[in-house]
Image (cartoon, rainbow, N blue to C red; front, top):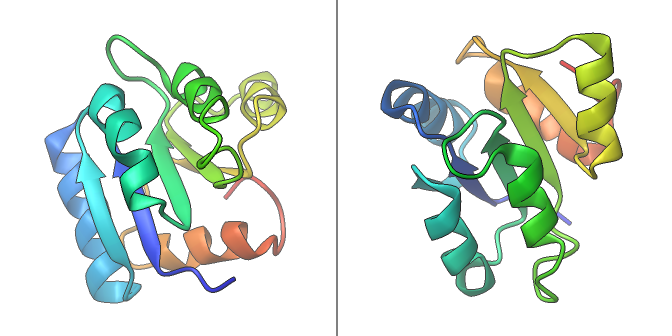
Length: 130
């Protein structure tokens, strides 16, 4: 399936703005952004994005906890998830993948290459950590 619509969840407004601009202007994707996991979870069944990009470190519910909740929603359980995080030790990356994520993108990221990295992870090309 072609990647068109991305749900982007990050509690940092600056990161959210840069990521959204990169994905829309450079990548040509349709992006719906959220500053909280709670609101994203409320909307996921209505939006049914092709991909969800989750910040790992958020208040109230981290990325893994959010992914676990997504997996309990029948309509959303198969939506692929990529984590964005500054925490990228090997054991942490292993935990992210074991939790069900298809990949990990390190923060800070280059806005010009970010959309292509997202596309590569979505298509299963190369490593799961970029």
